[in-house]
Picture 1 (cartoon, rainbow, N blue to C red):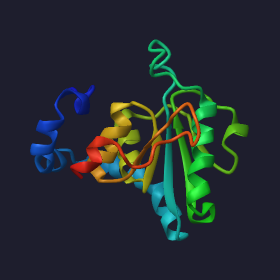
Picture 2 (cartoon, rainbow, N blue to C red):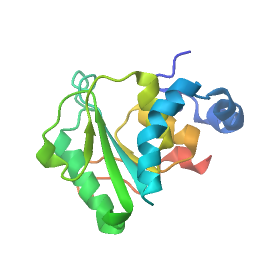
Picture 3 (cartoon, helix red, strand yellow):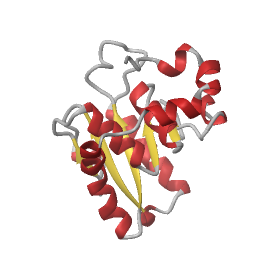
Amino acid sequence: MILWGYWFRSPVLVKKHQGQIRRFFRFRKASAVRSTQWLNISRSAGKKVLCVHVRLDDAKGHPELFMEPEYYSQAVNSFFQKENRENWDVVVCSDEALDTHLFPGCFLATQPRSLVDDFAFMAGCDALIGYASSLSIFSCFISKKPFYRVKREAPFFTERTEAFFEIA
């Protein structure tokens, strides 16, 4: 099955069949276990988990989609102007190495992982900051979790106004 651009193809059909779509996409036990180990550690400490999905490698060929890592860092800072940082752990998932100075106090997950493991992890988080990535958006849709889209100007992310949240 191809998920590429799922949301942008037919939001009317996604809205109509959202229950079936969510029931169809279940993670295999192995992926679910691997993805929830870190989430469980944070939750046992009473924290929520914010995932930041930094899309670099495949977006470089699409200048309209590519965002420098600094924008993701600014989005995290803006997020914590509204949320208490002490209540959250932050995991930054990226397909390339990142400057650790951009994400102080965050866990950087840049080692090779499977796409399914990343998808399961993102779906398990309490909120996600990302850009126009079907993987980010679809993981939030499946789990009914908030998605905040990175922007190039302050406050560097959108509020929960993405159209698909109207159907969640």
